[in-house]
Amino acid sequence: MPTKLICSSLVLVLVCHGICDSAIRVGHRVSLAIPLEYSDGFIGRAFLMDSADKMEPSFRVALSAEADNGKYSCSLEVFLGDVKVWNSGHHSKFYTFDVCVLELTLDGDLQLKGPKDRVGWRTGTSGQGVERLQILRTGNLVLVDVLNQIKWQSFNFPTDVMLWGQRLDVSTWLTSFPRNSTSFYTFEIRHDMVALYLNSGKLKYSYWEFKPSKNRNITFVELGTRGLELFNDKHKKIAQIASWKVQRMRFLALGNMTGNLGIYFYSPTTQKFEASFQALNSTCDLPLACKPYGICTFSHACSCIRLLTKANNMVSNCNEGNIPSHFCGRTQVKMLELDGVISVLKDAPKRVNVTKTTCADLCLNDCKCVAALHSYGNYGDSSFEECSLYRLVAGIKQVERGLQSSYMVKVPKGSWYHQSKPSVKKWVLIVVGVVDGLIIILVLGGLAYYFIHKRRNNSSATGNNT
Image (cartoon, rainbow, N blue to C red; front, side, top):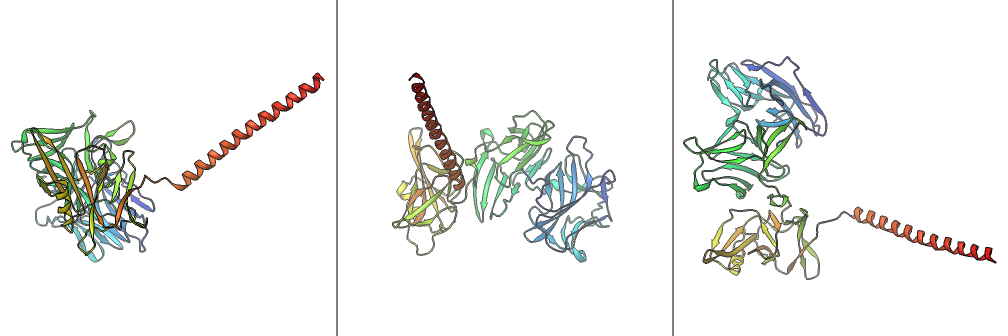
C-alpha cells in the first residue's frame, strides 16, 4: 500500500480551511520554508487544493518538503484522505535547502524551485496556453487552457498507484522502491499479460502474472468499479481481475515494502482503506520475504542458509550476507542442493532437455550464476527436463518434499549446508525457564505442605485417642 501521511518526528502541516481556491492560476507562487539544520523525520506540507468530489475521503493537493537521508526533498503531491497517491518526485527527487517553491509561471509552466529560482522539476508546458492547475474528481492533477483542454496530467506519469478510472497502456508500469534496498518492484502491462517483477540492477524476474484466456492481446487496462479490467484494441473487455467486495474501488497499489499488488476500497465502518484483492496471499510467495540466502518456512519465518567448514566454523549466513554475489575470481566452488525448497522468481534463462548434473555444470561454468533450479516431470506421453539459471539468490521458500525439482546454490568448496531453525529471542527462553522454575517450586512446595500438614493431623489424632 502507498505511503500514508504519517511521520515519526517533527511535522509541519499548513492546511487551508475553506479558503483554498479550487484552482491555481498562472502567476501564482507558493513557498514552504525548510529548516536551516537537518531534522530527521521532518515533513513540511502545505495543502493547496481539494477536489470537488463529495465522496469521502476526497483528494487534496499539497506542496511538500521532507527529510530524506541528510537532505530535504521538495515535491508536489496528491493525497486521497491520508494516502499519498501521486508524487512528482517518485522517480527522481528534487533536493533543495532553505525553501521549496511551487510556481505556475505566466507562460504556463508549472515548476518546483529552490533558492535563487533554481528549477528542480517542471511540466514543460510553456507557451501552450495553460490557464490553471486543478484537481479533478478522479484525482487526476491537470493543467488546462481557457477551453478546459488538458495540456498536462498526472495520469500520464504513473507512480506506484493507479486510481479509479485511470488507464494504463501496454508498455507502461507502476514502480515501487523499497527503503534501504537496491532492488525495486514493477507492475507491468504487456501484450500477453500483466505481471509483477523484481528488478535488481539489470536483472528482472517475475513472481506473479495474469494472462487473458485464449491468448488474447491486451491494449490497455483500466481500474473500474469491480476491479482491474483488461481491454483489446477494439476497446472490448477481454478479462478482469475481480475484487471480492461489492464496493467502488478507489485505487490499485504496488506495495513498496512487500511488492504485493492490491486493490483497495474505503470502508465507512472502519474509516480505513481495505484490500478487496491481493495478488499474493502467502508471505512466502513474496520475492523479498526473507533476506538474500534466506528461506521462508512453512511457519512464515525466515531460516538462513548456513555453510560450515570442516572445522565446524560458520563461514556464511544470510544475516551477515557474506556469501559472494558472484564467483568470477579464483575461488573454487561447487553446487549445493537444498532439500525441499524452490524459488518463486521466474523468467530466469532456461535450458531444456538437460539433466540435473548438466544443470549444475552450467551454473558452475558461469561465474555470474549463483543458483540453479532443475525441474523434471511428465507432459502427456513425454517427459521433460529444464534448467533455470539465477544471478540472484532470493525468493526461496520451503515446499513439500517429493516435488519434481531441485534447487542448487553455488558455494565455496570445503563447506556443507546447515539450515538454521527460525531464531527465538534469548529473553523468551529466559522468561520461559523462569516461569517453568517457579511452577515447579510452587508444585513441590504445595506437595510438601500437604504431606507435613497431613502428618501433623495424624499425630494430633493419635494423641487425642490416647
